[in-house]
Length: 262
Image (cartoon, rainbow, N blue to C red; front, side, top):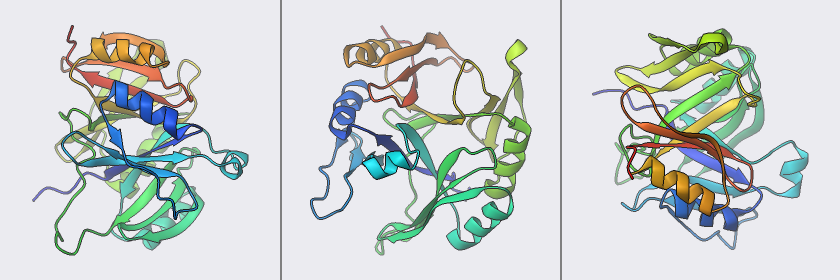
């Protein structure tokens, strides 16, 4: 049996959860759960049309903003033991931003890599009646799933070494980008997950996720109609798919990927 891909959940941090739900519903086709009225935070689940969950939306509080949180998509990476992973990451130059938190679905913590890029660690706890259940939030050919990940970093070599040590990522192929450096493809076993590249075009360090859509051209138009900003127009990438990079109305950057469509 192949190893499950580490990427297991995706969180949108936003200043306007209602607006974000409307935007991504129009662009990707998701629906969203209502926030739990008993909870101290406004957190909503992202639901695909097939009934599966693909992540969550966190409404940023003023305290979170004062702590430097800002609109962004942040991935969760699964680990076998969260305490061991936390200790190893801190010993390797990473930093814990949020301590271990235990919920019904498992244990998680927010950390940064040595270059300051935030992400979550997650030790999943499958349902008692489904002990072998695995996340399908990432699916390389799935509509409404995450299909690809980019990491923009000031130190690609350091990032490759870090994620290779802690998550088993491999970097077997690179794509030259001229003066912009190299794009190093992330492999996990036989599965391509994304790429690591130098900071270009004023991007801030961070992970960017790409959502599967049935038509890149239609998604591009939906982004504009819903108040988003196009960062790169639809363009074809190796493998034949088409990609659009964009920013939602609240400031979080993301991509969509799929057939060109009409």
